[in-house]
Image (cartoon, rainbow, N blue to C red; front, side, top):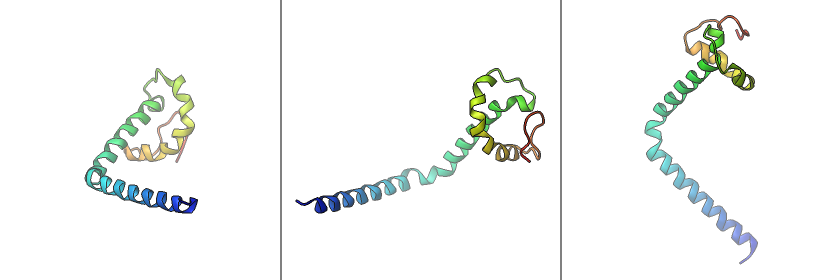
Length: 97
């Protein structure tokens, strides 16, 4: 067996595994994908609300620990407050609009 023949066999095995994975996802995940995303979005919104609660006037007891997360979360902040129905960002912190 040469090295090229072994590579082509492994490539064929990978293709078949990818096809099996796509079939599996199509059967089990596609019907529930919107529900899964909605639940993920709700939990992410709750986490952002708890992280930025000091901007909405609620004292945040763990603000010191969430400070490290702010640079990562700041990109999602604008979408979050629009989704919550706030036309402008809450006062007291930074402005995104």
